[in-house]
Image 1 (cartoon, rainbow, N blue to C red):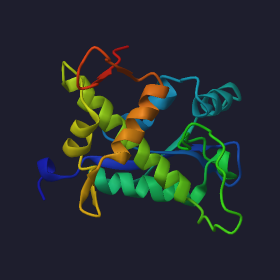
Image 2 (cartoon, one colour):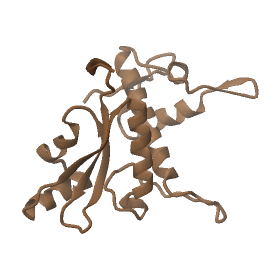
Image 3 (cartoon, helix red, strand yellow):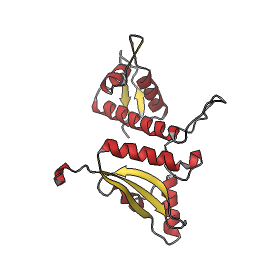
Image 4 (cartoon, helix red, strand yellow):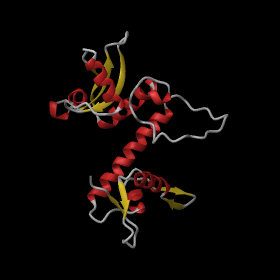
Length: 197
């Protein structure tokens, strides 16, 4: 395989050197210098707070590539599996990844068994779908409809012989709630237009 054919993605861990053993507190995927950008541009997320705590204590974040030479799909899968395996702080684990959807209370059946990590996998998938919908809306000057999203992104089902666009409708609703999309009621088709920030 020539260098130009090498898959450019990798999965990395940010680790806290103050713990013994040195444990990851964040798992991510990226290309180029992505893994090291977190410590250069420290943000206000829980991950950023942990990085700042490590720096303030006189240490450096340990950045480790866990797998290299991956396609984007392989990197996404591995990232999801590792987040599920380690767990997030929100689910009793120790990763600062914020993959749980919107912190809403979930009412579950008492007898429903939820395997560890499935909520994180769903949240990662939902996050990717949201990003795809926003990108689609940004690419279309006059916005997109629910049907546009369902068809363009392969989110339409054929339940009992009828096309159903429920998943894309739900995602559009979540993005409206988050303020990332706005509804253009002046359009006869009720298009959803991306909010440019």
